[in-house]
Image 1 (spheres, rainbow, N blue to C red):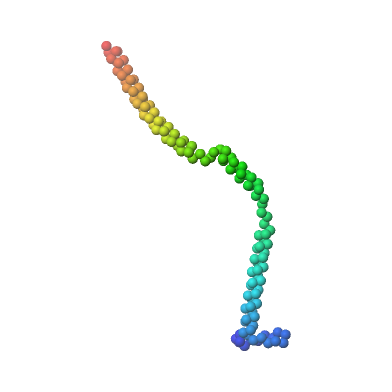
Image 2 (cartoon, rainbow, N blue to C red):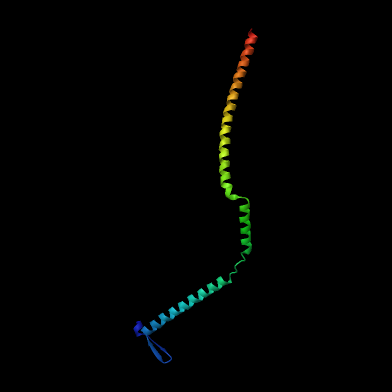
Length: 126
């Protein structure tokens, strides 16, 4: 039995198979459109139900932060940090020089101690 041989009797009217297929296709298309519209409408209602908080206090806080940044002169901080970095490099170099001097003083102290020992030994021998 093919769709062409099918018949449907509704209220005294007889519908052939091809018309049944057309009516079902149109009906399912309309049903899908109604379903989609209903889903979209429910999503829009959900979005409208969201309460937007009052942002005035946030704007006031942002203004206060901007005023504090301006008062603390943060824009010159980069220059101050660069100067501090340069000073640290100079201090490091000076410390390296001082460590060399300290090593030389230690070596001289050893030499003096050795000489004092030699002098004492020579005085004892005489």
